[in-house]
Length: 427
Image (tube, rainbow, N blue to C red; front, side):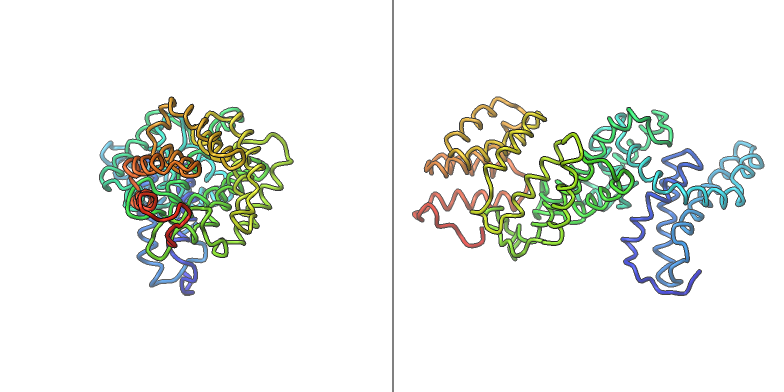
């Protein structure tokens, strides 16, 4: 053990190492659930010992060896009960452990990708895939995941346990899927990362608009996927989209935590470094071949971010991009955003026509965003009473307290005697 002090935030280091170590243990012992438990014990040992004893020369190897010993102890215990201790102990001997650590270290990047594909296997529900990805690949604790999604820790523990059991029951091998399976399941991997980011960027419920730890983790994991598959344009598109969107984070709320909409944000607070990286990524990805939905969304985000003032936004270009995106996907949120772009280019009446057609789509008709957009376009059209009605309806449908407060404030503003454009400074 080296005596150098910890000079890297311990939590960040352990989260980065988690998928590499877990991959090595699963590859060796072929038991995902038991391996995950062993890795958690190794992480706990590191969190306890490293601050006092110093950082090991090879932190990943240290964690892997500790997890291997935990698995070996478990195998020996089970072997004793089954009177096969000698055979199992020999198979999991310290000599074998050292060899496996070297092999695993050379394949740690592949192991991370295998874990991502495993966590996003079709055998798992979407909610289970998200939870297991955050636990196994992101290194978050069950308590942290439960807090992020506003469910009791016991509930989240059961969800993760069921996911691991589903992997065991399905007999999913610890290996990269075939080229055809990879192409299909990569979409699921990217979708899970996209959903994790969205929940962090705009929480679906609770007192805070954002859960920064989730959005940051989604960006970190997406970077990892891109490092593993650097030539995939859609992965680059997703990373660009997340960076360009997250760049606005500091401007989205005021000191009181109240929501500030995009068109009213102080753009001096936007992260220009992230914007530059996102623009560079999407500019390089778009000409490389077939354009996917994440690339188009990133291009839209780039148009917003490159406008120095809200009134400089190139809405015709955004409308053209949304028109392409609509032909590519049946996502109702895309249709909703397309209606906004139409209203900004051709006037609110045209946007309201498109919103009316969306009212028959059960996937969006009862969502608070439909009412919020309807209210905004009605306000643009000069229909105060209609706007107030839909702002209040939207407020009643969202579980996010900051969104609810913002929507109610808009309704109150329009219900007062203030001129139509006189909005409160905090919004």
